[in-house]
Image 1 (cartoon, rainbow, N blue to C red):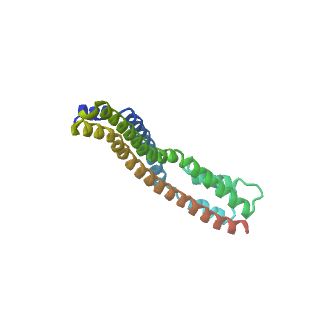
Image 2: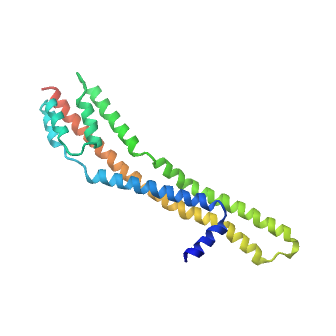
Length: 211
């Protein structure tokens, strides 16, 4: 199908085709931006064994210095551990609260726009259905105006043009919902890594705090 034929189909689909295509454009932009971010985070998981060892030994100041020397200046794990090590006169409950809150905050930032992607994926077929209903109404208005002179070709033409928006809506919605689930999976992997960091840090901190 050439570009001209595709443009003709879009025009026949009516005005609601364009919001559907806009949803597709916005959804693809969100997907690509989040996918690049998540892949970079998962690929660049940093090893903090040196920090855990110092915390295990109760050397909290040295642990902060070691943490500062790590290359990933803005990694979520690094920021969260910095906050935990900066607590004055810490107890176990406070440290766990700081770590847990840090993970929740970072996950909230990382999940930004995912709800928008899900909404776009859910809305696109509804817009398509609305376009089809509007198109069918227009087709039957034409049939009524023609009285008994209507033929099958006229009726069929009006119906298939009306159903174009449903087809476009589904063509947009299916990939967007797949993209959303794919990103959710990667986000879950990031959360799992951060939760494992909390567990490892707390084990080391519990031992180091008793030194």
